[in-house]
Length: 195
Image (cartoon, rainbow, N blue to C red; front, side):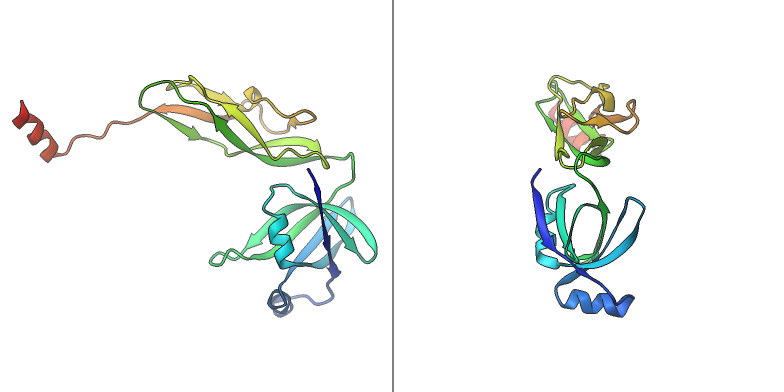
């Protein structure tokens, strides 16, 4: 995964009013924490951050007070109506360090013939991977699966260098049979008239 570089400025003002002023200036308030160090409050350029966060678990290189800091997003707060980023919690990581992250689960293939439905029990999978080599997603084949079949976390092939960090017996996907709708009174009458 490529590293995205952003410039950060240390924040000295705190509270709602300061956060609103920061957002009006097209900046996003953020906090860097991790490795037992004291938290650092910063602001980031809003548009560049929005573009960077399009990639899940993106690796961000920040320059803060002349120091280079490598971080990954841990929590992103968005405005419920507009979708704008309001605040970001960033976790400091080091090259070669292992981190636990959630990665997306994608499916490929066709289910067995019949009226079966695919149900996502979990959309993501918790894995441990090196901070500089976090996979974006995993792909699972559902080819030929029938009603009653399920895929457990331990059944999903992980990219090289990643190991499962969550419950290996957790159901991720399951195939359920489609429920037939009961015919309405009008449909039943029409069917009887045809007979």
